Amino acid sequence: MQIYEYKIPMPDIGYNANAYLIKQENKKSILVDAGPNSPQALDALEATLKKAEVGWDNIEHILVTHGHYDHFGFVAQIAERSGALVWVHPADRNKLTSALKNPFFIDPEAAIPFLEELGIQRTKIAGLINEVVTLEGGTKPLPESSIRSLAQGSVLNLSGLTIKVIHTPGHTPGSCCFQLVENGAVFTGDTLLPEITPNPIFDLEGEERDLSLVRLQESMTKIRLLRASKAYPGHGKPILSIDSAIDRQFTHMAKRSEQVLGILGIYGLSTFSVTNKLFPSDGGRYHTWLALSVTLGHLGWLRVRNCVRTRRNAGIVYWEAQ
Ligand SMILES: [Zn+2]
Image (cartoon, rainbow, N blue to C red; front, side):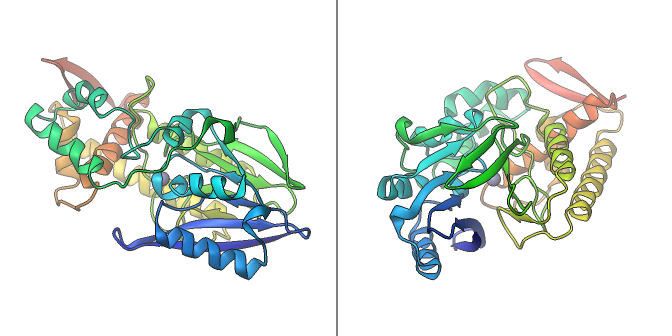
């Protein structure tokens, strides 16, 4: 068995997405993620197939770490050409089957009441939604018949490989990591990254909108307990020291929570007001969405620890230190 790591450049946002081809001696192969729907994703896959000396028909399965366009965007094309089955957790499944224009929510209209609760003025909401919707190219929807569901703790036997599935919500509700039993390595998607702190991204579905950071930390602890030999992340280089990578993430997150608590003081602030104080500069593409997600994640983390409480006034949720 051999693992081929390959990078898919994303020139418009200035970084790469990783995908992995796992090839067996008999050429049967599995992909972990596929990159965005772009010519670069096709070029990178073709170069990797050539290097590994396998054909499209040898790709039997595609494991999707999570439902973000830079990881699953190119999956439908590969499935169509190779006949591969696509494995994804039910919580992220809709993102692959609907012709999405953005990776953050299914129905932009449904986002409005929630965004108002966060303290964003009604007049700014349409612009914010457009910021995400218009910047994304649509992804090709995947037919239901090629999808298989991932479940926490299940062990898959695919193409002669044994793969343990670990459900690791937080970055998205359906994020999963995959441990290859044959060599102990784990594919972590965006749940554990080497250089940057994964974003806890709020999802509009479900009742746990402010618990994404709490879930992300629980998921990192699950990864730690795997005692994996090596981690292959969704962006950046492989991680050789998993414990210290996780320690770094927890330290960084704790500092940021302190910062959020400091901003709150004794005054009640909406999530959007805290976001603007925490991330004062406009970082361009997705800046507001990601900044809001991170802020809400930390507020939820502090709420669970009884460091903050909420008060509702005229449809807006205000956070206060306690
Ligand atoms: Zn992601």
